[in-house]
Image (cartoon, rainbow, N blue to C red; front, side, top):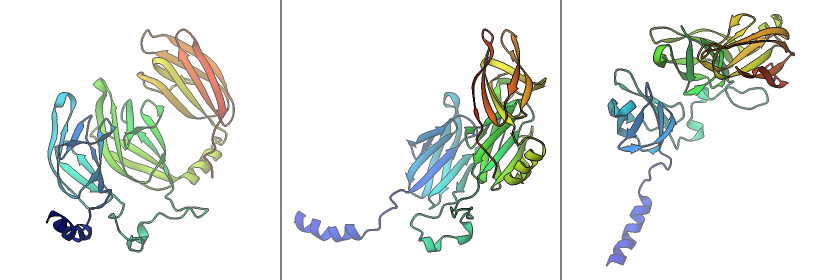
Length: 314
């Protein structure tokens, strides 16, 4: 009897609709360092404030997040749409905001995908949106993250991010006393551009200006920066870096990248935050190069490596 029942039930099992193998990839982002549980299960920590859950079935799912020392941050339900990727953002007022990804629903035939949503073709026939450069300016000394990753510090208040995917990007910054959060917001970045962003003291981030990367490169050449170099300065402990008398880092930094340095002689000075030690040297900067420099109270300022700079022009 059991054998007959198994044979009869086999066609039913085979004809039952199956769930999508991959399901939905859900990324949950908090306003601070957190631990997230989705339907009682922990996912994969991407950054201190971002967790990823793969293979999630669309529908209403319970989201719980805790902060430092298990402090409750948010608890509620999120309606996960039937898409390939979805983002869940836990706002400051404990709201749970769902952001469907730009990818189509799993199983959508290629002919049904929105044609206008496809990236424009670049030279050579490769279909991809041109990546951008984002430059973020803070109202005070800061550390900036773009989509959870750090960029290059231009000076104490300015950070640069290269090879940024265009679209809606999350920008956050910490600084000041006790490394408090200065701002966090989402900004729509154009493709193939150098985008200037400013975060204000009220926690907002705005796109203040943007130019095509080609136009930026032409302007650099007109300004005599076509052969400019970069300095990568790393201190043994927290320091302030000055180039030709101009401050180029915060006092709590241990590394800074100084861009657009014209070839020739430059005065480089490092002031250590602890002990107040001060080191100074004169650098002979070659054209179109990248210099790696270390600074310590015992060893002074030393150039450890010099290499040709990768071309960023068209």
